[in-house]
Length: 293
Image (cartoon, rainbow, N blue to C red; front, top):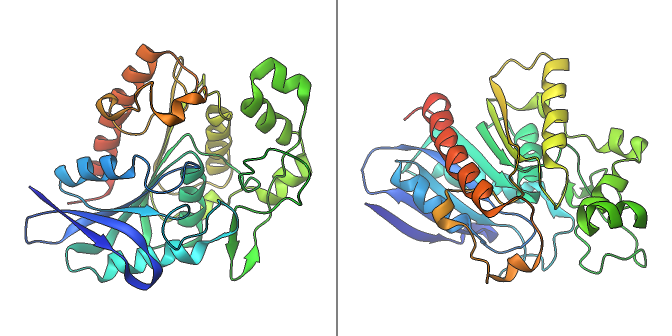
């Protein structure tokens, strides 16, 4: 049994899922990607609560009073969510994890690097750098902005670079991100300092990701862990024929008629389903090992 309550404290837009058991439980904050709102975070949070975790599905743009677009989102907003979880009587304050997917995976690595209260991280299809804010017009007409801010200042980011040859070869979005990563100076400035994360990390990606090169970017995260002699456990699980949407088991995967399926996320239907189920099992193993109950 689980209970679901709205969390609207001090500007948060979130839903809290927790087991009915009276004792304190490890907490997990779940954040979605560039679709905005809650997306699939509610379904994922509900399943995590069934495993015994107190889970906060957190929206950070595109809903209620939150910013309409994914641009210059304050990292302090995520800190508010951490503080809310720590003060919740249902949550074990010293045992809080963070799970994010896509841009939420980028955020999960970044937030965890900034705030040591996060003790375990799961990042589905993340990036290893901060990218420019999501420009739904995909044009060069407006000045680029960072996706995130800290203490009121935009964080360094990799701006979009339009390379029509790469876009024709790889598809619009994947080509866009591959071209943008060729700006090596911007990449160096915008690398997420993952070595500061205060706990183990599980990275999950698909080699056929058609949105951005998440598998390669996860490899860069692993390289940085190794270079900096990261003291916690880390693992990158990459699926050969899977695409971008891997968060949660296959039974909660978006249906082909859903709005987001207008995009090509990559991977075959069978490979994506198998990857989602295998990854979900590995998530459970990771949480059991590293976010004690």
